[in-house]
Image 1 (cartoon, chains in turn blue, red):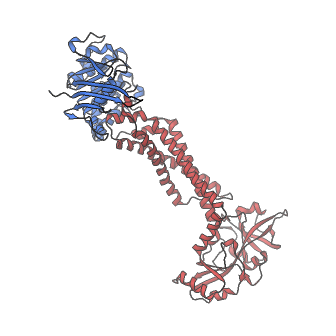
Image 2 (cartoon, chains in turn yellow, purple):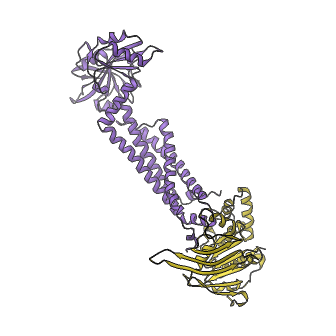
Image 3 (spheres, chains in turn orange, purple):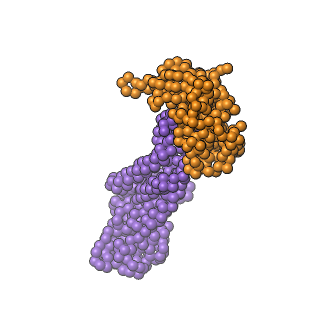
Length: 248
Length: 374
C-alpha cells in the first residue's frame, strides 16, 4: 500500500551562522494510513523540523517527501498552503485556538478555508464538536474551556478539513494525566478506526503504548525505529470507554 | 467566514479604545488642519466670492483685492457703454482706522457699495438691512468683531478715518483673512472714511447681460477702457487667494500644517493598526499553517482595518463637528463642507487600509513553523 507520507534522503540545513546548521540528514521514513507513529528524541534532535517538513510548513534542503503520491519538495510558497489544507490536520501543543472565536467558530474557520458554505460549516462544526464530546460547548470561548477541552476543539478543527494526515506536536504536554489520556485515546482512534496517518512528536513517555511505531531521532538522523510489540509499557493505557471518546 | 476580523477588533476593549482613539485623533487633526486651510482660503476671497459680479475692473497692476489703487470714476460711464455690460457699479475696498470709545484704534477694511444694487451687498445679515445703510453715516459690520471694535449694539457711534460712523446692523460669519474687519457702508461714506477723492473709485464691478460671453465682454472692456485691468471673478479670486496664502507665507504655513496633519494622522493610524495586527500575529501564523492562503489573511486584516476606519471616522466626525461648530465664534473659522466630510471618509479608509498594508507586509513574512514553537 502506498504510504500516506514517504520521506527519502531528507536533508534540512538552516543557513544561519558561518557554516549553517544541519537539522536533518539522510532521513527515510514512511507513514501509513491507519498508523499512529511517534517521533521522539531529545530537544534539538530535529523531530519538529521533520514534522514541519512533513506538514509542508517548512521546505527541505534536499531529498524527497511524497504525500498521497505527490512530490512536495520543490513546491512553491503558493502551492504548499493548498496542500496543507487538503491533506493535513494540525494539533499543537499550545492548542493555537483563536481566542476571539468560540469553539464552534474555531472549527468553522477550517471549513470556511475549505470553501464550505456558512450554513453547512455551522452544522458540520456542531457534529465535529459532538464527536469530541463537546457538543454543548459550541458557543464557549477558548478562555472558558479547560486544557483538555481546548485540545479536543483543536482535534475537531484538525478533523474539519477531513485530512488524511494528522500531525501533532506534543499534544499532551500541557495536559494533566486524565485529559492527556483522553486526547491520546482520540488520536489513537483517528488512526485505528478512521484510518488517518497520525504522527505525534512527543517527549511524554506516558503515551508510548498508544504508538504503533516509535521513531527515535538523534542529531538529525533516525536512530531507531521500533514497532508496536517492542514498545515498552507506558503509564497510560487505552483505558477510557470508547463511547466517552465519541469518535466511533 | 467566521467573524475573525470583528472579533479581533472588539475582543480586547483596551486595544480597541487605543485604536479608535488613534483614528479619531487623526481624523480630527486632519479636519482641523484642512478646515483651517479652507477657512483661511475662503476668508481671503470673501468679498470677491460674494460680489455677484462677473468681472472686476481695477487700475493697472493690482495684485489682489486689498491692494486696489484708486482711479477715476468717470471710467464707469465708459464701462457701461461697452456692449454686453448689463450692470456696472463702482465700489471701494480700502483700509482705514476705526476709533473705539476707549480711544484705541483698529484697522478696518471699508467696503463702499451702491445699496440699491445687488452687487457686493453685505450678506448673512442678522440685524438691520442693507437699506439701513442709506441713513447718514451708517455702517454694518460683523458680530464676530464687536468686541475687537468695542461695539455693543446697533445705534452706537464711532469714528472712522476721522468721520462719524453709526452702527446700523450686523452680519454673521464674514471674516477677513487679515485682522482688519470688513465694514460695509455706502460708496459716498466710504469715500469719506478712506479719504478718497469724490471722483475716484477703487473697483468697478460688472455683470454681463444674460447670454453674453463674459470673456468677450472682458476683451471689449480692455479695448474700450484704457489703463485698467479686467479680471473674471474667478481669476481675481485666485489671484487674491494666491497672494495671501502663498506670497505672504501664511497659507504655506497652514498648508504645511495640513500636510503634517495628514502625515501624523497616517503614522498614528498605521501604528495602531499595525499593533492590532501584531497582537494577533500568532493566530495569523496558525491560519497559515492550517493552509489559509495569504489572500484569506489579507482579507481578515483589511476587514479589520476597514471596520476600524468606519468606527474611527464616525467618532472622529462627531468630535470634528463640535470643533468646527466651536470655531465659528472665533477669529479663525474651521470649515468642513459636505464634500470634505465625504472626502474624509475615503481618506480615513485609505489611511487604515494603507496602514494595514504595512501590517500585511509583516504577516506575509510570518514563518508558519512558528506554530510549533511553544
